[in-house]
Length: 134
Image (tube, rainbow, N blue to C red; front, side, top):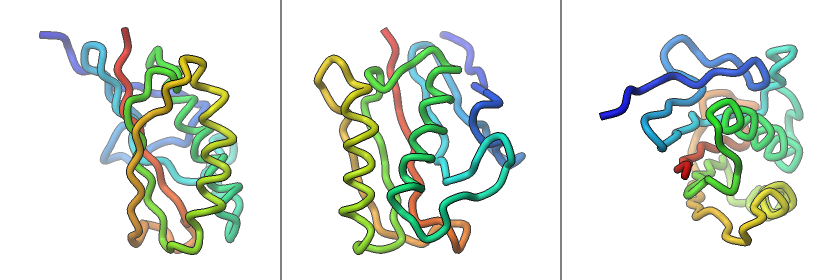
C-alpha cells in the first residue's frame, strides 16, 4: 500500500489549515476545491467576473496538478460549483478555453456542475479535480 502525501506549491493559494492543496496516494491525486485567489498576494481576485474567476481557479488547479506530477490530461473528473445558473455559460466558455488545449489526448475530463452557496460571498465559482497518473 502506498503512502498518502500532501501536495503543496507556492504557485497556488495557501490552503486553510484544515486541508491540503492536494493529496496524492499512489497514482491518484485529489486537488482541493480552488477559488479565485492570486497565489502571490493571497488576495481574492476578479470579484463579479465569473469568466475571469474560472480561469484563475483553473490556473490554481494546474499548479497543484503540476506539483503532484500530473497535467490536465491526467484529470478524470472536475467538479464545478457555481452560485447561480446565470453564470453557467461564461464559466463554461472559460472552462473550454482553458481545459481543451491542455488535454492533447483529446479526451476531456468528466465534469459535474452544481449550483450552491460558496464559502466567500465574492466567490462565484469553485472547482476541484481528481487525477490518475500512469
